Image (cartoon, rainbow, N blue to C red; front, side, top):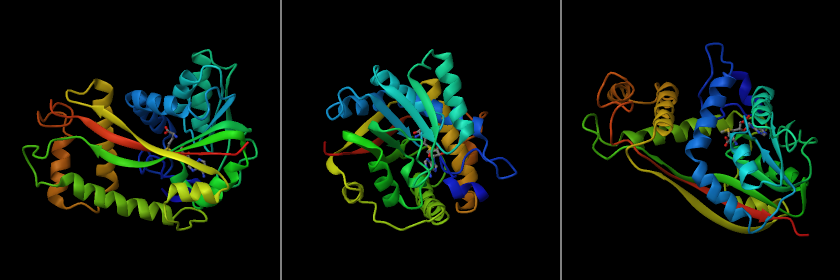
Length: 299
Ligand SMILES: C[S@@+](CC[C@H](N)C(=O)[O-])C[C@H]1O[C@@H](n2cnc3c(N)ncnc32)[C@H](O)[C@@H]1O
């Protein structure tokens, strides 16, 4: 990940960098956009729940938006709102602007360059700040929340999407390999994640008690809820492609940490010619949950 870690590289965790160590932004854009399509029903439920606090937000800012894949879902959920996608990566924001043009949304869709915790001057005052899997890319998460609290309109809300249940994809017995592949993969991911966080600029350890961190940022913590994404087998094509992509990048990321027999299992799962591969097996599913924490700024 090299020099990109400084401004929160790692992104979807290790995917999409080419041989020079530079990120392949279009690959990352495609990946995030596909996941947003796959998970759209879940994000729709989150947005409906948030309207308890912000029934008609004037301005919604998606902080760490990437290519704005989820920002466009927010534009649907809040049809009267101005939507602002904010991210450090210009290449991703350009992708968001191109899509806004294609969808005829330029009158209420903007992008701004912003890097948490301190380069957020261009973030407009928001009625809803949405942070979806972006805060964990920031070295000092507490400082980022405190800075963001300053961008919130009185009565406005922060929705922090972090954590939940890691995805399940396959039955316990997949017909080959050593049982427990996913558990070992998740243990390897945890190590990778800790190393990613240690390498961030201004990296600061903090207990990830999100309600406590929101409170420490001067906000009034309101609620936490988890939302299920439950796509049973057989998976639609987009969801299957998402799972294949996830296994592909984790195979790359974890090739040093996984045992040779698990690598062999991975290679079978990723071989399009193998009838038992992720590409072809009928029993592939996607089951996961995303946790959302809400806090408000007193009017
Ligand atoms: C896992 S992606 C999530 C993108 C988007 N929120 C979504 O759910 O599709 C993480 C995003 O956080 C952004 N990011 C990384 N460091 C950041 C920082 N210091 N401040 C704001 N955003 C950051 C990355 O550029 C990337 O777009």
